[in-house]
Length: 530
Image 1 (cartoon, rainbow, N blue to C red):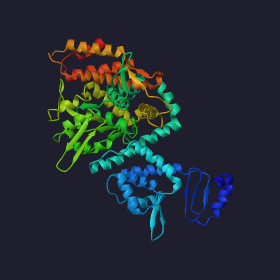
Image 2: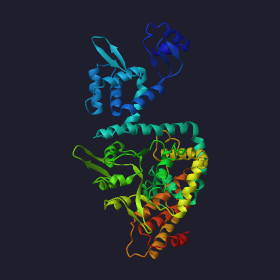
Image 3: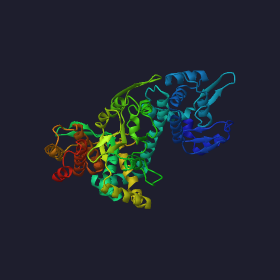
Image 4: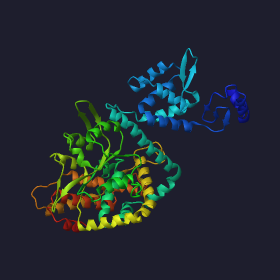
């Protein structure tokens, strides 16, 4: 056969197929040739189509689709009962995939019914098996976690779809926009991002959007090192919370800017496919579906975080989730976990804002343990902020910011996607770029120390009303914001950007002021710092 293949020309092969007695019954989808029913011969391969078909099956059917495809790949031909048994073994529980194997035959052409009427059997066409095996290997690289509830099983299918959305965006970027994205990255920086947000929202409310976009950079969870020896200090990944009175723009900053809003003609600025919007989801449902995200890095966008604490016993599992710890949860009807949560949160919640400080509307007294594990920012509707929000809303209605967004948002999103892919060593880009770490600078430490000293000096209370975690959040904020400089340095280390350091220390002072119930002169401290 090999010698014959070497001798035959493509024209002779096509002629051979035309006189074949089975040309009206069979198709052939190889790496180099395609033959359709009727003997239509094409000088092109079909494996890309086969790969896409397999990915779609895995998106639609998850572990069940994988188990059946795996069984068909591993047998030459076998009765349905044998294939069902083999698929059940791969899936981990009993399967009867009659409808699924029929779909593989009728819709995708990945299964044939062979044999006689007396001894029927099933087989996968031999020529497609290498392409199918390749996609199954991708699936096996991130195997499905153990899922104990139907909610988690349903969610896992969504996880695969979201991951495929990110992969498709990255693949298109690499093929069509890689050079432009790197070029954009060389001109991008914390200053450039701040200027962009200033133009959109003004000098007051831009900070909320800066935090929201910076959190998207932080999700890659890049390592942050300090000193000449490069001792690991922490990682960039943080949970974000915007809180305050209703109508102060919290949802727009955490949801609409990141996911996009067709109603307001706002393009998405966040990572494609990696932000899970939790509108309408209960906390118990979240804890159940969280199993589907094991060993994965997503961001959960929760726009009504208050509602999650109307249910008893939610503080402890949510605290563990924010610590990226091991979660176990039991009800009368089912048990979830234990499983390790590895994703992040971007939330907003309403509070009663007073002349000094604020009052949380969550009744659970342990809620401060949740707040302590997030990078929090208070929304107070001052006259200045009201004026900025009013102007921003009018400009949004007139379409002024959209014109600016259309030019920058897709490039920003591509830059964010590429940095995330490099830092997480995504196989589509791993050979072209190497990951980097963020280097803490003396300037960052000196600014933070100076801020701490000024706050303690002016603090009117004897006790310090905030924890050391606040300094950690400021360092994470500065480090994540410095990732905008990814393509601005040839080194494996990205120093904390001076502008990022100032923004992070500004956050630290303002948040300490809020936590201290405004017990020190905020503007005097900021003026002494900057």
